[in-house]
Image (cartoon, rainbow, N blue to C red):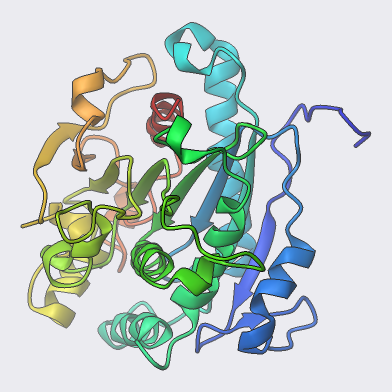
Length: 344
């Protein structure tokens, strides 16, 4: 693509690979030493100047590497198609919508059994565990690098770099856990954000929106594990300035049937978030021809009931995962695109 040219389709994402310990791997499948993570990402990440929105996507359970990249591209392509067809439905994007994405891949394959679910649950925990897991550290560095070029935060409450680019996080299943851990780690540990310049306490790390499809985590996870995501008296500079939006569907057997047996309670992806340190709002996943009212999404935590759309086929409803991966559809892209629009 020539300098200054704008892509007609969503470009292939930049891929970041992690191993079973959450360590960053090079394209040659060599682990990157901890003290070289920042340099490695800085060499590989070249944010295109034409992009209006940067999307970081982390996949979930039983997702092959190639499928992870295709899933991100599919969602963003659907979003671009929606905006191109009816820009009047997204007035906040009057200056355009040109997405660019980074896909974080990790080893999520297992048998579709209770043992397989527990294996990946434990792996996800191990990859994020304090003192052992590298995933939050690596993803935190990634988010910190994308944050480094933002405009003066005193002039804007949202994250945008010098090119006016907004940062959005999207996760599926266990990928949502990694994003929540990474946001907390990035915000709590200033060196993660500081490449070669000192950390500026006047410039808190923030993301514009976070959307997690069918999160594989206990319903009380935001009280037990992720309370620091939200602003409070103790954490006024919390990382999540925009809403955290969570879809759920009773047809999701992975976070219903399997999660219930592995954790003795259903997961967020099946039943929505339970108690949280901030007020919540519940709504329904809308069709692409229906705009979301502002008051529906303007909350710290938004539970989106997708029972009517994330249903799977007759075959998948009785499969081990059920409708766990039935989020790759235009209605999901409509929600993602609306969050990008409202971040302006």
